[in-house]
Length: 163
Image (cartoon, rainbow, N blue to C red; front, side, top):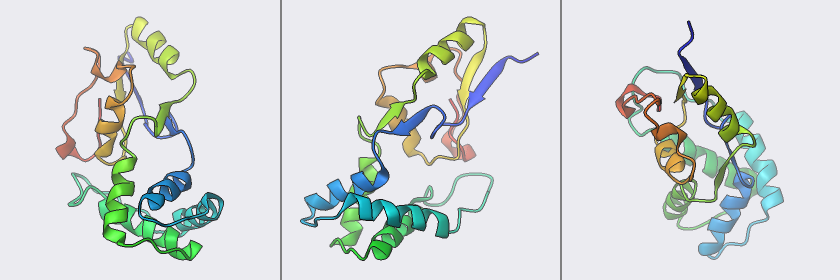
């Protein structure tokens, strides 16, 4: 008998409110750089395809995948032929920006679907390879399906967040 229904996070339960390239450009503006979001988007899509994926592993990553994201941002800027200085500070600002309220939104129908599963007696969970920022992202939503008594809790040390 099925007792628990789990979901992936990104592009299943949540999605960005605007392309990542828009956020990259907005954050770059704080560093005095003017970047074209459309040009960045083309570069981002190319970098996303070209950059090797993080290998599967059991347990947490030493840096929570942060170096991979740093490479993605650097590769995106390089492909777009942009430079934002100082890059380490810019990267940190971009990385943190993706945890702020309003950057992510629940996909349409998520609240209703989760409510239907919960009313039917299912426990709900999120199993994702998203990095630990997912905990902060979920806290930005007013809907609190992951904090209900029916949520699954799995410690971050296990590698993939699970609520």
